[in-house]
Length: 116
Image (tube, rainbow, N blue to C red; front, side):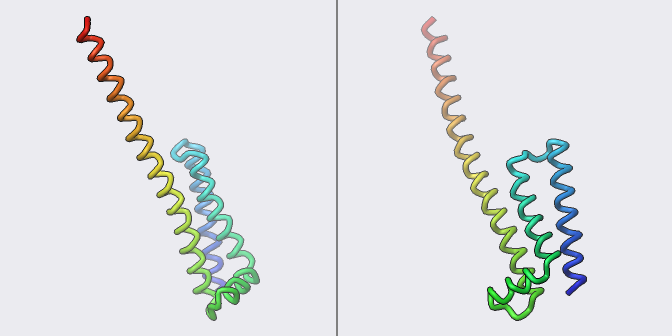
């Protein structure tokens, strides 16, 4: 179990470093990095405080603490992916609206040129 917790600690620290480096290089926007940083901090907290992980496994009714950790990791990343799906859907809707507005402006410009 200690190996798993140590591996989770390393994983969460690497994830934090990658997100911060991506923000620094402007590969990822700050508002999107917050989800990843929050997820990695939760994983770091769970991996460094085994009592919290033990409480979580008892709360969920799971006998194996390692399984509770894996389930928690899965749920955290599922929430992050859901948040990004919502953001992508909003961006797609905004892109469609922008395309329609551009088409209206182009039509009006062509009709103005046709009147001259």
